[in-house]
Length: 508
Image 1 (cartoon, rainbow, N blue to C red):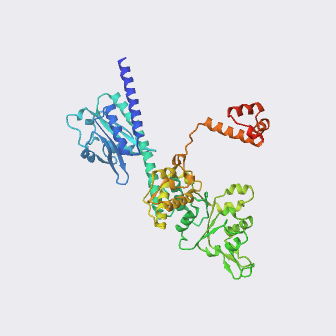
Image 2 (cartoon, rainbow, N blue to C red):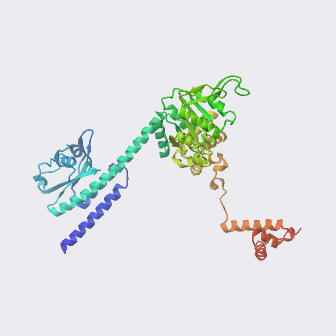
Image 3 (tube, rainbow, N blue to C red):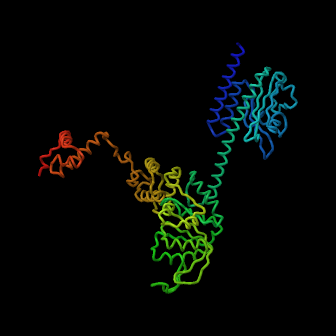
């Protein structure tokens, strides 16, 4: 009976320990902050006198103590091993746990930390378990304790093995986070001089896509709503390409009239039409060996879509009024804010042209979906327009910041830029205040226009106004007014009495 009670208490103790360790490992992404409390818990719950987490450095091929309980700084420094050296080195090399009931009997126990004195040496057991990530041993969890009970030690090694797996999971998560942070840092560093501003996850992904496609000649289709910065992305692709020392020609397909867009794109011969007094090179010829950016591609007419498709497929065209076939070496970047897939369903955009353009799509996020970038952009535009207007702006007030962050920005970055330009011009004290922002950004709190009546009162006020207007239009005829509002004459009469509406003045 006594043995079963001891075993039960032991199991409860182990469960409490595992729960405490799991809670500790979830508290922070910083391993230095969480490993130490785990080792302290091992001391409190299992009675480990000293414990360590050692990690294997594959570059230096050394095993060093990452964290320790019960060791001084100098003792930790001494605890350095080679792969296969000592118990810890062998555990990391083989990936198998080791239990030494008495360290005196083990020639592999090296005591490199010099912490075991002659009085306790014969009474100490040593436990070491591997820390593995996907069958690869990256380190070890070890500790010593005073015990001669073999069953208790075997229980300890099971518990330490579980905790070793939990530590491995924590290390794996933190390594992934670190790799992602380094990746984002490298991408941000590559685009440090870029006019595109943003360090949100969605913009890091855009930067990554630009980096991937820039070095090729692949056709790029930039998708995004108006004001999201499609032209800046197109320019960035060109700037980071092998064509960066050649022309970057921009064409807004929506801004050019249907009658002249063919001439603008492909040029014309002298006399091709009224007003064609000389030969003119088109945008494609001007972009030869460089890049052409076709903005608002979704606005092209079906006839022009056919001509553009030929250029994409054959890299050739004829000028308007000419018969000579002209070959060009041009990289095409297109952009649109229109739903091309829906346009294809309505036969307004050619399916074959869509697939020719959509080789490498880049989708730009809405400003409301990258809120961490809003103040970066606001600071940039504030500095920009402060210099342009000769009015240096020292800060953006807290109420203005709150309005920026709570607004939904339907006009995206372009709307934010316009708001900042307006506020800079209106500022008289070097500060962008909330009241300088357009009415569309204002909230009820910032303008003092909070609703001061209940829903019931507001509904009754509306009902009264509707009844009064109906009676007025029917010259006080309650039955006719009631029919207009879907009410019976009796219901109308009750409401007239409720709201004390004087109908006598409405009879004439």
